[in-house]
Image 1 (spheres, rainbow, N blue to C red):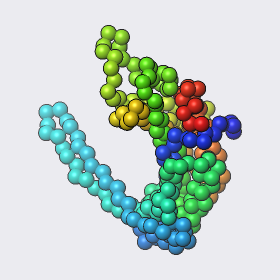
Image 2 (tube, one colour):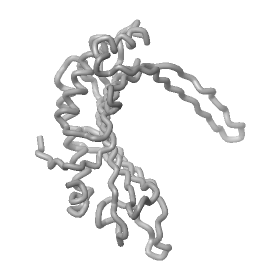
Image 3 (spheres, rainbow, N blue to C red):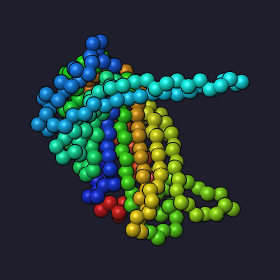
Image 4 (spheres, one colour):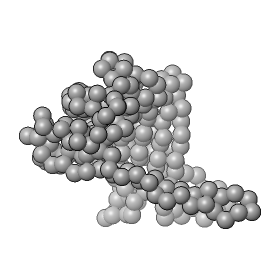
Length: 247
């Protein structure tokens, strides 16, 4: 694995490790609630999680057909004492969230793996179909600046003959990587200017689909590869001037 630099003031506001799984028959919310029994001293808060879906369909010459929302409770969120770590135990998988401050990959990964093992004992997943990492960065760009490219190399570009002022933007890129057989969804946007600082949100979501054993090492090896791909995108998208902001 590549040796990536670490920053004293990393811009990560939230990191997520997500595992989508098919559970054994008969696993329900009551079973998932039992997750907390072994970790209540570290994750004392629990709340129900719900998921809803709806939509509509349009056919030529016909009125739109609206599908009513469907769904309901699908799991629980277990939150640590300091509110910085959240375990999502769901009927379709598991997510570990770490909020700012983010320490390092090793501690993040190890805590996620420990809680996954607890989830695996309770939910008895049969197979894992997708693994993902998502890192949401908030880069505070000092003003004034002349060009986004002073700090970030993937930027929106305005046609030369159009007024060049930019009050806001939202950009989403889907970037496949053949080497790791994964896909990255890169999202950039900007928040309102605050005290001569422009907050830039740089969101990197990398994932790989497959069929992984729930109790095997393969999916953790894939997550290491996803971390490398995420870092390739991040470090090749920022400038030396940006790195100075994180020291």
